[in-house]
Amino acid sequence: MANGSQQAAWEFFGAELKRRREDTGFTQVELGARVFVSGAYIGQFEQAIRKPQLDVAQRIDDVLQTGGFFERMCKKLINDRRYADYFAPVAELEALATKICEFAPAVVPGLLQTAPYAQAVTIAANPFVTDEYVEEKVSARVERARILRDATRPEYWAILHENVLHVPVGGADAMAEQLEHIAALARERKGLVTVLPRSEGAHASMAGALKLMEFEDAPPTAYTETSFSGDLLDDPAVVKRALRAYDLARAAALSPKASLALIESTAEDYRRCTSTT
Image (cartoon, rainbow, N blue to C red; front, side, top):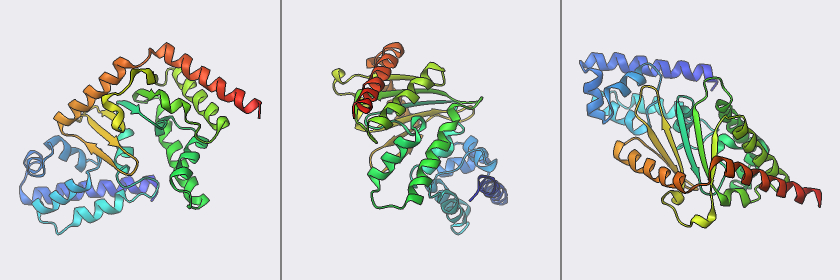
């Protein structure tokens, strides 16, 4: 589904939600309380500013007695083959965020990935897929990354565990290009990237990738991901714990200057490997 038609469909979703809510006599706050989100969230759903998660759509159906209408529509709209089901809402939220903070324990975050690196990661996880499938996934990842170069880009922070620098995803050439890309973004002040050195040992964030997002008119969210699943979290207490874990990792990371030097020197090491082969 093209972006324009998908947005129009979400606008229809919002208009229907508003109509059916008003038909039952609920205010946004009253409906929000019954489906365990804020009234402001309901308003954002109705304006197609924010997309509800599937479980929220299911609760809306239960409260408004709409026979699964919103669940069915939500499933259709979030069924974007470019992303795993659990990640599609996160991709939507990235475009709305005013600040994004990421911790990457093993792989370069998607927003920082180059096409060759993204291709290598995709094939490693899906060794029997078609070239078309790989191209679709890589294209989606590169498209997401454009938000870091937009004039209205979010404030972007990333902490990379040092292991990320030393796993040669796609080979030495691809890794050199990948690390040079990260260094260029840092030098252009498109994002602030630091490295958590291996010498620091275990950390609270190391169980999986962590993404924290802040918004202009909505509460912050946390997203955690492992190899085969991800969880988008907006419970304030849980988000607070995730933020603390991120702060602990940031406190142990190298300074931005030292991190940049390490990233660039590691890229040079990969370049030397390619020149001797």
